[in-house]
Image: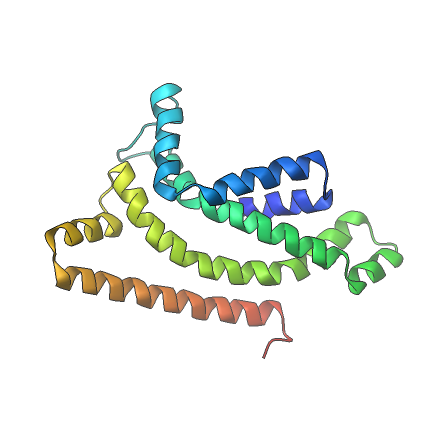
Length: 194
């Protein structure tokens, strides 16, 4: 949701200073590896500012850093895709027709522009599940959380082939099911797709 909002804000005033700052931030978000983002967030928010705990269990504060770490690349990529898709949608014929009818700018952007722009975003969201699955391995390791990712890392270090094979099979099935759901959502969002 955050990536879509950033992309929408950047597309409303293309080539403006706000757009340039947001797109520069998305370059950084895409460029940094997930584990490095996690380490930087721990360094900044836990060790330097002492606002958030670096790891552990319990309340919602513990989840903020891992969620930001895992979602940073997706937020940046979704913002870029949404911005590009919104710019294409806002220059299309049906949006010009909606403006000619006298609809407010908000109605044109949300009802006509964003609805059309979300079609490629849905596809990217489905494909992002792969980055969440692989990113969770690194995120769990960085933050010291026991989970499927940490289990795989331990299985690899122990050379436990059945555990590695089972985990890879499980993650592959999840990835295929999410892609199937993405195709269904894509068909519902754009009835022209057969």
